[in-house]
Image: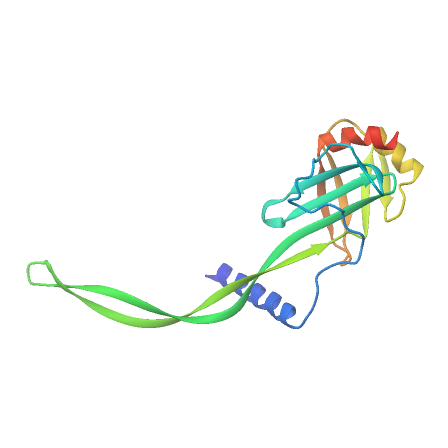
Length: 195
């Protein structure tokens, strides 16, 4: 019951923020690719503006989807996620059928008791945000990327990263961080892009 109330209060708060016009989006550069666009993930392609590029996707279940694009021209991330909120309260009829018994314990009839209850009707709001910076730990060195073309030092580190799934940190506008996973295929594709 307590957990339900906590979730209810949280959802009401989000609903109020949304109704007042607050936006949870950041202003940083987002990835060029849509989540369900038929993109070939972790394969090097030739982008008309960015040159050699690889796209990566990290599906995070209820936490949304992280998409990224990697090229010498820049690294771009987009986090797509949704928030459920209470859109309105609705009155619903609740009918209970209570059995009536005779002296032998046999059901002879049912008595219907009609009641009414207030039930929340939920809505879903979709959001998109991009990080302010990305932190990498590659071969015992730390790199921070914010915007623009990839520096020669970071490009060299990406090209020489171990051939395995990599974890990186994304820093958001609100100061919080998210650990993201970059797939092994994308890490291997960096060698073609950044060497």
